[in-house]
Image (cartoon, rainbow, N blue to C red; front, side):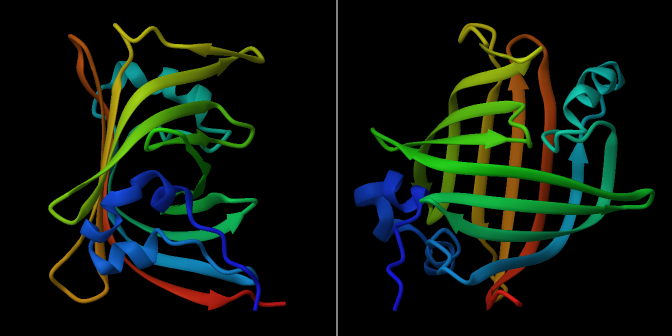
Length: 206
């Protein structure tokens, strides 16, 4: 049997691991080699209502980092793999005018943190503190880097948006809920998504 490395999320949680809901512990565990985790669900909302932000967000759309516009009731699928100790996810949003794909890779860092590299090539990099709140997994950003013209620029903390993610298990068996918000000082909500999905692990098809 192949050795299955510990996932970056569970490594970051450390002693908090037992507090995580069992369904979430399974979801955030490493996916065995030769298998893929598949999620299917619907985002109730995704994007931003602030139209002045749409042209800015379009700069990150092609890389699969951020989706401009405001969208409701969007079906989506997730495909998770563990590659070189990183949690690699591909999320496909099935929009009326065609699919949009978001890619990211999460790796563990010391001190109960993870770093999420978003987009391909990486357009955004976000460092998160990881915790458990009422059996749900929570992430809160501590630093954000943006790649512009080939250079990675760290946004100064005093003006950096705060990214918060909460993933919880719903009362219905096998259903999980994910909620993400991005809020900036003085401006408020810049971006968000929220939805529910089911999840299973299958062997990769040859």
